[in-house]
Amino acid sequence: MQIEMSRAQAQQMCAESGVKILPYGNAWWLLGNGVNRVVAKLEGLSICDLTPFQIIAR
Image (cartoon, rainbow, N blue to C red; front, side, top):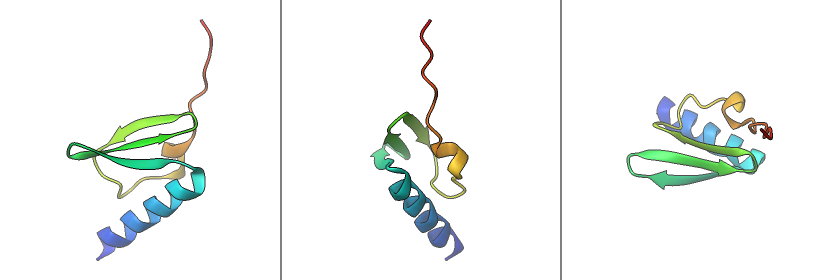
């Protein structure tokens, strides 16, 4: 039950941050503005995981 609550919190955080959660094999693909990450579990996801990467030209 606690895992389900943690997953629901992660889904809400992603929705508020404009990050889509897409199934990716046995993992999840988090895709949004500046966010492109694959995670094994949604449980334990923090707002730091949803922070956009800075794009720096080389």
